[in-house]
Length: 123
Image (cartoon, rainbow, N blue to C red; front, side, top):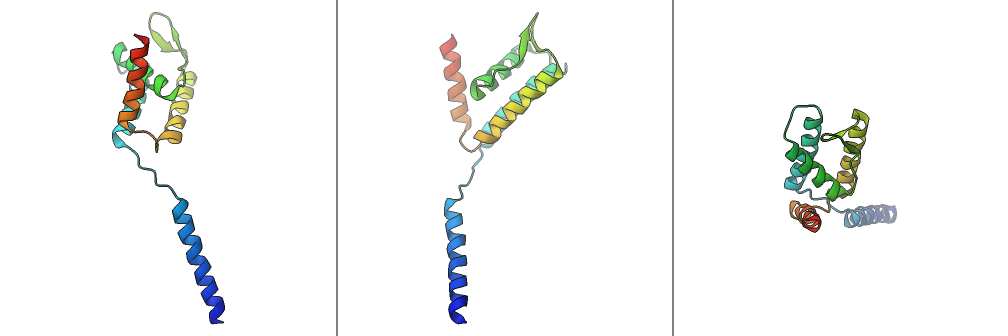
């Protein structure tokens, strides 16, 4: 009977230790998280008419598109805008999905280096 208890305890401990070895901890960079969602908020607020600064709007759109490689569904008329709320919501969902998939691998510094590098290449 003691042999079975020992084997059960041994294998239970082994399973717990092995599962903890393979579990990776995700460390989220709060500055990156704040910047990322701030840019989404700027796009949303501008589309709702709450913000009027087109430069902030374009800066936020460029940040999100360059970082996520998700092209925004905007059209260019007098000023770039979303054609409808559905297109805006689809883009927001794409950006948020990208964030969930990449949040463990990104820092503010890494994001800034990507968005600034891409900006300098276009100048």
